[in-house]
Length: 164
Image 1 (cartoon, rainbow, N blue to C red):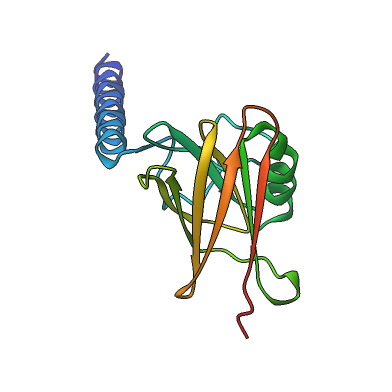
Image 2: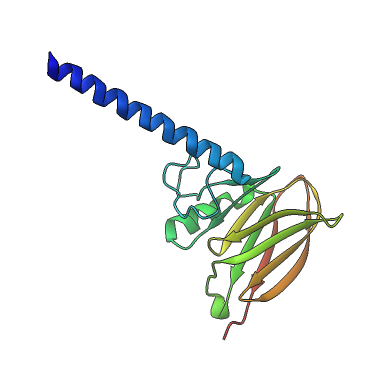
């Protein structure tokens, strides 16, 4: 009888601790302005994307995902390109894939709609149709490209740096 009572108290304490942790994590995600994971979360485990697609992030009304360092993730991102209005690719010498590229997307009115760091050579961005300028910076070297996002298809922009 005493063992069952002790077990119930341990289970109750564990459930209370788990609920507290979940509540704190949710509050952090809301306070950070990024939902669906954090921009420092380098895993895709536990996300609802499936198929190796990295965690989808949210900044305001813009969704994005990036990565592609591993073969599964790279394949998943390339396969998903057609479902995203903007697809970005970052390469170095000899078409080597790059990560840690700082990306800023600015709308036609000069307002920044996305500021993020790419976790790999591919970044997929869900934007409203319109004209944008993409600023991509790798090792203090910035490149800028204008893009037009339409309601149909995918707009692609490739950025290449000679980092030697």
